[in-house]
Length: 449
Picture 1: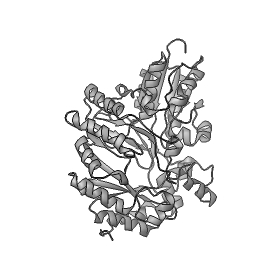
Picture 2: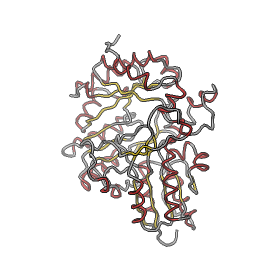
Picture 3: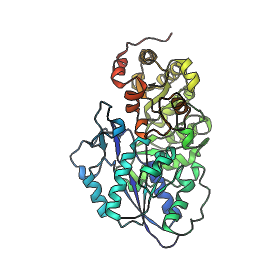
């Protein structure tokens, strides 16, 4: 790829009605940095618009001891497609002035790589691209990530990037980078298996109180509302020894205690994957503090798994039930039943966990779902002594739910991605706005039938 050049990586702002740093870090972009470092001669620099620990933010609250906390924010005008949503709209992350300072300090880039999160956060990408252009002129800008993968057409027409690279970075990033810089892509090994990826470049981030861990890609289930199969085909897992070595190395290098699993499916195939990992963590000295914000598959939590989770250091448990309406979920993705939740809670309690500290995800606003069904689900979880946590449905292009919504005329296939926003969809399309569901969280507890 010729002489060494400067590559600037940017994690853009979030533009939304609400945002919280719930163990969020740009893991994909940090993997990209490692790929560039390993397989090219180029130098990388990094700007994180969501950096809550930027020194220019001195004096702001730092959040919880495990790393979670509020993003700084500034209210901005609501874009046209969501102007009728009765909520304030904000830019979350560092102030624009701090971003401009970061650009001024960065080496003159030969290419800029920008990642993307939720499809409806694209205004943050547009803002980054505009400011990069103002500073560096016609420097090539390459966009990847979730928005680029789920909405490549919109990203090409609206983001301002010169090149949009859908799909996993390791399958197309190096070739795309060579294309914008000139020259041939470097020869490298097959990186299609998660275990072959170099470790993320965590040295680029300021705060390492906690770090993300990815032990697998994809999910063995095919729920109609989930994008997992669109972002990664099939289900692949890293060798447990590779994950264990990464966690222990990060703890030794950075003093990191908290680790959050980013897996969509951490526990399936547990005897050959999760169990050896948990056993290794339990045996490696004082266990780290582990968190599972993406939700754990209930059917995989038996007595042995619960004991190993406790020994390995799991502190924050989030379980995926979605709904007690079994007829509804049978059509959408029967990942668990109420009986599975009861069994999992018994196992976790026997292992030493307090049920009151176990969160259970429940979906709200799924097409065809009634408020009564949501209230019953909340009451059921509360009756079991656990903590219900509602998650609002977001329509995702390419899923079966999306096709049904388009087919019924609720959404146009080319609708602005701002209307993928869970808050916007709830108010404008679903008929189940958050204002109507607040009282559901106070539904009285009921015991299992």
